[in-house]
Amino acid sequence: MLNDKVKHELITIVGADNVQDSKASLLVYSYDATPQFQSMPDAVVAPRNTDEVAEVLKLCNEHHIPVVPRGSGTNLSAGTTPVEGGIVLLFKHMQDIIEIDEENLTVTVQPGLITLDLINAVEAKGLFYPPDPSSMKISTMGGNLNENSGGLRGLKYGVTRDYVMGLEVVLPNGDIIHTGGKLAKDVAGYDLTRLFVGSEGTLGVITEATLKLVPMPETKKTILALYEDIEAAAEAVSSIIAHRIIPTTLEFLDQPTLKVVEEYAQIGLPTDIEAVLLIEQDGPQEVVDRDIEKIAALCRDNQAIRVDVAKSELEADALRTARRTALSALARLKPTTILEDATVPRSKIAEMVRAINDIAREYKVDICTFGHAGDGNLHPTCLTDVRNKEEIHRVEQAFEAIFHQAVELGGTITGEHGVGAMKSPYLHLKLGDEGIAAMKGIKQAFDPNNIMNPGKMFAKSERKRVVVHA
Image (cartoon, rainbow, N blue to C red):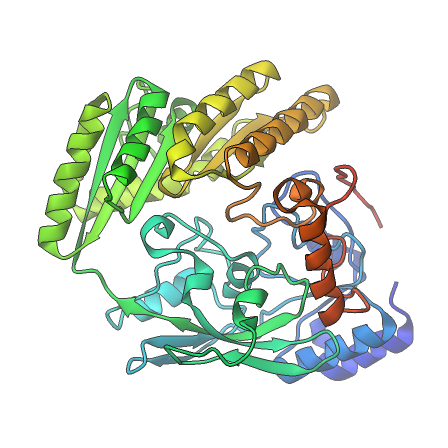
């Protein structure tokens, strides 16, 4: 609990309206979108600018009070759950686009800005910010930066870190640093920009980011390829990449996901086949036409029973929207939805899909699989009920087996959701003890008092999901 002196100092820094500690307020920020993780903070603080963030961190560092930066709480690895209490830091007052620089093709933003608001603002000027997480209607840029978020367009355009040129960061001791900038080249010292992106709030607080923009693509086309064999669909993914075609989007949905999404979205998706590939290409008209023709042929060569080209942008957007609603649609079926992500090399997609299906049968659990197949990032999703302890145990065994399989295939335990508290027991599978020790050394250098989002990232001896009530 915060003592009265610290609470008074927080109020002095940010104002009484921006410090909440009622039970109702704390409960709201005791969890994120990750099932089975909940822990009460001691206060919720909403700074109004970078200087106030610095003063809050300086105070918390002095008193060894944990600080958890938080956006909209769409995190799926318990990365924004305050597992050791302390302060949840909100950015509801820091939501601005500071500048769109059309000469340098950059945009500078605050962490509380909603992702889709940024995308819409730059597109209104004929520019393009490619990262598009499925949660973009509600996720914030600060969350995207901390998690290095991906999205449907990641195959061709990359992920959040590929568009971060510079940052303003407040360190745990209250120092404010600036990394990078509007520069095409900059090798002055360590690349601290890339270090902070994806650090999950464990090293400091990002208060401003300068992001790279690119010109809007001239045109785009979308196709839907239907398969009666789920493994044939996975083989088609590998075949497209092997033929050196990089689509904007190459998404995979299995039949259970299709049925649920169609029931939810009602746009005419086929539900009598085993899998579909949603594929989009953008760029100059002649390139798009050529690539779509080749992709369609490759899909047919790999046993697609039908390949449909969207007849309009409205139809194409409906397909993209349906894919983005997969998690929401699945979450309606059972009380608990556990969405994971594991990534393998693109050439191993078919093998990974087979393994997921085998593991689901072995542990007698229902797993729907969809995801960004083109970049190897799959989202096996289990529909279950947290009240059924025996089933939950089998679900956790199944996901552990999936993580092991992904690493054995040269992959990783997470492609875009982050480690947080959820996957920290498995981090050693990817990094080994030596890699974890190196990361702890970096953490110690930046945050010797361990106030920044403690209890996250680093491997634990066993998986723990703790519910703490005030």
